[in-house]
Structure formats: structure tokens, C-alpha cells
Amino acid sequence: MPDSASRRNRSVRLSLNDRERLAPKLEAARTLGISDLPIAPSEAEDALFLGDALAVLPRLPVASVDLLIADPPYNMDKDFGTAHGKHMREDDYEKYTRLWVESALPLLKPESSVYVCCDWRCSSAVQRVLSDFFVLRNRITWEREKGRAAPRNWKNVHEDVWFATVSGNYRFDAKAVGQRRRVRAPYRDGDGAPKDWDESPGGRFRDTAPSNLWTDLTVPFWSMNENTSHPTQKPEKLAAKLILASSSPGDLILDPFLGSGTSAVVAKKLGRRYVGIEIDGEHCLAALRRLELAAADPRIQGYEDGVFWERNSSPRKR
Image (cartoon, rainbow, N blue to C red):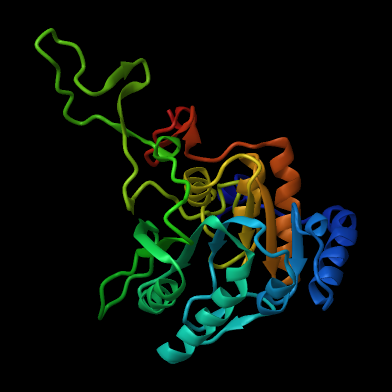
């Protein structure tokens, strides 16, 4: 990275002071994560557990979770720190998916919703497992914007998020996740007034209903203050859409593969409670630091004035 870029690097960095200050919280997360005792409701609220999801999930309080957001390891060879993802046969990955879904199922309420992230390699396995336990509602496809060129294949720049519910009684607030788009063809009515769009000093915009194709996300990188060293970190904006659409303030959000804490951080910023499980100590430490930062700055890049903005079009970008 050039020196000029280094000076502008806003990534989350853990200083020695940060590590010393957060060490007791990390040790508490580790102690709770490796215990084999049931976890009390008071211990499973705004809490992180350092441990294996398959070991921790069965210990969490039954019927306590309002929204499950899961970003499990994709079916590929990937270094996540202390853990290393390994490519499996598709039926083995499906068995693994079934294991953690079955462990999470008793924790959900009858009105709960479920979102599971995946890529094209494992999307079909996730779909099959979810359809066995839940009502499948939709598949969201989002553009990652970045991706490696492939000389003998199409460049891979998208991922999926499967949306399912426990029952037919579930929350979905479409108004909370509206998209504000620039107007390229500003049609006007007979009196010359804007037709289905608004004109402001900042430009011409139209508020549209949310769709299942998302092209407004930016994968975290060094100039974003949400960026960490986690290799598959999801944007806070992505988590915000899922949380605002399918939960209410005060609801409990569960993420069994927390990574560097994105879903917990966004839950905190949006007035929800959270419980997260992460197997890697360094990523768990980053999550703890991000939760501290969220208390001081609850902003979410690309979400302002109660709407989601197109990439590079929000008020702070103009």
C-alpha cells in the first residue's frame, strides 16, 4: 500500500492498550465458550462467546432468538486465522450445514426469520437444508464489486443470502429498507412537477421498494472504518438491511459465525440485542473493539435519513 494510502487507512487496528483493556472481556468470552453448562438468558444478551458454534448453540436459551443471521464458512479452502476452511464434497458440506441448523432451530421463536450467506458453490446445499426446516421466502443476490479475474472462467463478483422463516407469521418491514436511487430520466407531469421522484439541492432521487438484487454494497476495505483483517467480512450495510427488515428494536439477533462482529455491531447501532459465537480469538477481539467504537459512532455507511443510498451517493459522499 502506498504511503498516501497508509495515512488514510481507517481500518480497525488493535493497539497494545486495546488488547490489555479488552483482555478480561475476551477471557470471559472464552470461559463461557468452552464451558459445558447451560447458558442463562442473562448471559446470552449482548454477549460474545469464543468457541465452536456446534458446542455453544445447544447451550443457549430455547426460544429466545428473534432473528438468525449466519455467515458460515463457505465450501472452499480458506484461512480464517486459527481455523482453516477446507473444501468438502457437496454432500459433506450439506451434512455440516444440517448440523448447525438443527442446533440453532430450538433457539428460534415461532415468528423468527433466518438469513444464511453463501456463494454459488454451496448455495444449493444451503437451500436444500433450509427447505427441510423452514419456509423459504427468497434468495438475495448481492454484488461484491471486487473479485479476481479468471482467465478460463467468468469473474466471480456475487454472493447469495437465503431468506427463510419459521412460520407464516413473521416480520418484514419493507419501508424500513427502502432504496434511494438517482433519477436518470426525470419524467414530469403535465404541470412540470416531478413524477414519482423528488428534486433537492443534492440532486434528483426516487425512493424505491427493496428488491432481492443488491448492487449498492461495498466490501469493506482499508479506507472504511468498519474494515478488519477478517478475509470474508460482510458490509455493515448488508447486515443493516437484514436487521431492519426482519426485527424490531430490542429483539435478539443471533450470529453463530460472528467473524469480526459485523452483525453484533450493527445490531447494537440499531437498538437490538445480540449474541455472537466466534471460534477465532483475534477476530473475537476485533469484534469487542468494534462494539466499543459503535457506542461512540452509530453511523452505518450508506444508510442515512432512514433510507439506503446507492453506492457513493449518500449525503456524506456528495
